[in-house]
Length: 363
Image: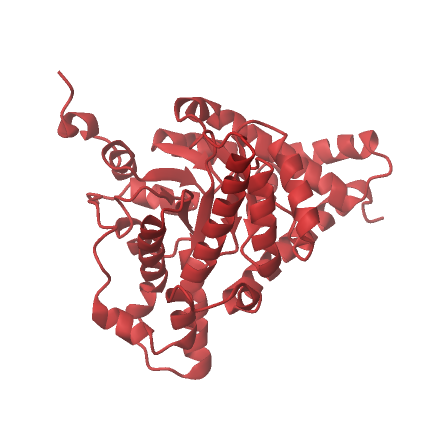
């Protein structure tokens, strides 16, 4: 006889309980091998990487990676710091991808993927983004490639999908960004179908960086001197994710939502139960795994209308929450977009500097 839910989950962490009893998938927002191994024990079936995460993984084992940088510099005598640094990022990513290979096989490609992010310095060039996405996708069968939800990125998302790249939309904070990205993926899939190309093994996801939306709203409230209940400001990203999830189902979009950039427990507990991906940073994953929370499905429970009414006093919340709150041209100037791109660009520069210090050390 099948085991009862109680038997399956007895003694399990709340994260493992969630993954065993609901359709909600857990990914780990880190490519560090030790962290990913632990997250897999909590039920994680995917992982993500970006310039900030890659730099952290390299620094976590810096002696090893500095040695590898010296080897790469000898192997590639004409390469600059950026080329060598991105070779290291590829190797970090491939180690994580190997850990996820069993889940990839088990889930038929829908999970078990490692996200690699396109170089943010290519963000203004759709063709360059697509070319790098194809390269990353060729490195391992279970690579999924991050492309930003900017005006240029939307174009690249459709084309990369058409070319068979599994896309993870990033630098995305809002319902209109998620919808534009999901629809771009649909266009790419339909183009493939029209040409008789396979789509059965695709696993695209569209990220909403819920905590980064909250961060930006708090900054706007402080900047503009608005009197908003601080507790309400913890719900902005959750509200956007819930609305985007409902819109995806209503429109029949095949990509799944992925929730990332955690800042509070609500961004976990309020989104359990949907056919979506929750991808907390490792530190938040550990906090959730060690908690006594019973992860009950709440994805379809509306946010308190009084909280929504309060948040709607902030113009940028309305822009992020309403499906037509922004056009793709508006995405580029949204505050959270600019701040996040600048952080990713700064991590690129730090990686360049790390490589420079290894191959051209100070006298």
